[in-house]
Image (cartoon, rainbow, N blue to C red; front, side, top):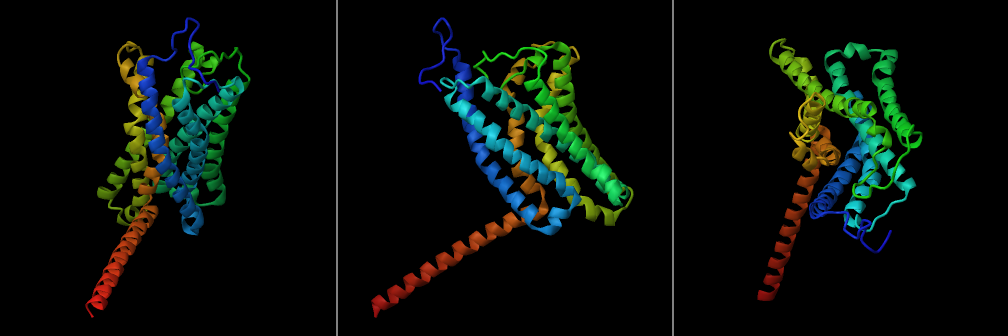
Length: 333
């Protein structure tokens, strides 16, 4: 790290005023979100792993994995971003660090996107086709094997892209955080990356979640499946609530990007894309927080903690009042 600001060859700053203001804002947003996000992830993992019923529930398995991955992502990649936003004008990472940062950034984000997309698909199976999980063999091929394959693909794919590229990576760009592999500069490869690893997972999450909501409502009011609705309502609401952050934050960005690939002029929506380029990271910050609110068991534990703190505060106030009244009586005597 250097003590002087980074400048270009003609002694002009590399960072314009707009970039400096944007990085300052992102620093405070990331810092504001990471603290409650990590607390929520630790809280959720503690109770989901501690209680046997929650730990063994099939619909919680991938949520637990996602929370673990999310916590690791925040302790590494998100902390790197926060440090960059704080000291970008004097921060010169080594090529090795930038490769490591880029690999963590791209691969772990891809794992989380693909895994949660699978959650929204698997929830249809758990609710409407639970007979497909009736035996150990079926559970292995439908419940356990897909997440393993989904996890291996991004880790292996981005390892090749970052560490065994067919082109030469450059490390001259110091004005943006993270690392952009040279492979993505190729038109075909770059299009594949955007479509297969960004747009498809996001669209899958939104479409599958909306379809789940419609199927649940249809089953509830048209098929008169009262018992099944009571049993699976929690699983439906859990996915719908978590998917809302994907619908609000990354989905508009991905939709405009998709329209650009379909031929829409690049200038349309360009400013929106530049202003929302970090929204995907906000999604990962909010995931643990929303997960705590979406799981009814965890939500009840939060409420019990709040009630306990209120009762302690009330008891403490009553005790201090009684002590004060006792002292006044002694004084009057």
